[in-house]
Amino acid sequence: MTKLFVNNLTIIDSSLLDPARGVVGESWRVDVELEGSLNQQGMILDFADIKHQVKQTIDRFFDHKLLVPADHHSCQIIESDVKTEIVFQLDSLAVVRHTSPASAVALLNTELVTTETLTAAILEKILPDMPSNVSNFQLKLHNESTSDPSFHYSHGLRQHSGNCQRIAHGHRSRIEIYQDKERNRALESEWAELWRDIYIGTRSDLVNQFSHADVDYYRFGYQAEHGEFSLELPQHLCYLIDTDSTVENLAQHIADNLKQKHPESGFQVRVYEGVDKGAIGSA
Image (cartoon, rainbow, N blue to C red; front, side):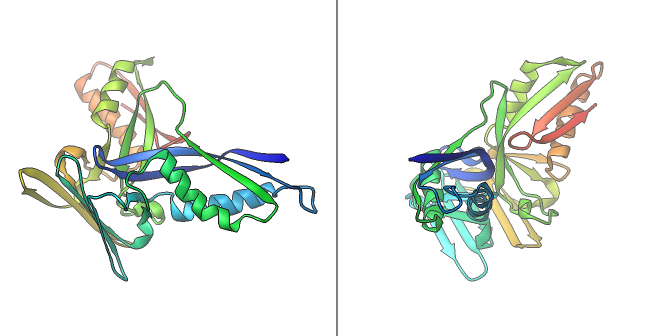
């Protein structure tokens, strides 16, 4: 039986709700492998059809969304015609509350969002549309392989015209810091730890601060082209900046912060937005 494969078909950049970690940004590479008989064109499936059909399904249902473990015992889902509200209690008993149009969330029938459960959810969407000559379809999600320091961050871009306006989507991102043109891995590790499992919020999107059950919370919210978005989460899981949280601004934010602490040095900071793309800030 013949097999067909496509490596790095697409990248999924999303956030997920995790009871221990909170709102976690993640990036997965997607590889696919198909097994089957050849059609009248001498193919299992045209590469163009794979790229169109499979990638389009992944982008529509899973990319740039908040991935929700709908079967988790501490997850409450309230749906209406115009919005979906998610109330998720963490292991610490703190609560994350996310409200958005339904298109901004992916409800997974699982207790935890893992690589395995997300893979199963994607296959459930893809397999019914495969042609009859495809006898086996395998999908592999994997993180970027790197020894560089990296961090998981979530954010929302109110002014973005596309899906980045969703208030809780995210990335797993590498960081490179050069001090006086020399790589400084100690500083990279410091920032990777500072932004580990972080929500990077824009101060102008902060609509309220409050305390409940001895937990201090931030509430972010805005009206965007796709609808109204709101996110409440513990303050210790957040990092506030004065600009939009684009990767350009994040790279410059780190460079400026380092320059303030080490005025005698010059800095160049490369921050990745997921895999193989990012921005460079200098100070």
